Length: 81
Picture 1 (cartoon, rainbow, N blue to C red):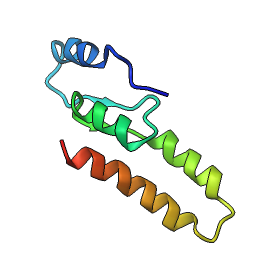
Picture 2: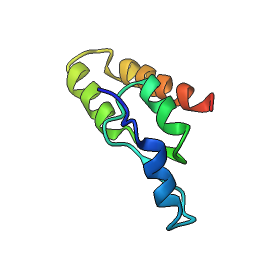
Picture 3: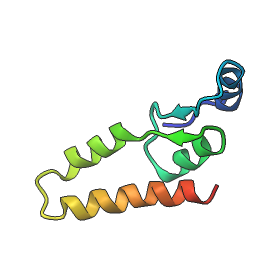
Picture 4: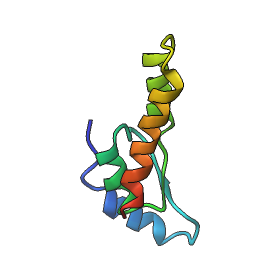
């Protein structure tokens, strides 16, 4: 329901051990959370959120449109960083 308050410090700890990009994604489910995560991580993973959208709209004729709109909202939130 919310991004961990210690996200920045945890990502910082990981950065001391690697030069690889760091992806964070446990529980990211809306644009606001994606934006917060993107401020600290190199990538935002929101696979479960997409699966949840498919489950919610799976029988709808608007499935593709609804999932596309949802994914675009997450991408737009991250682009503003």
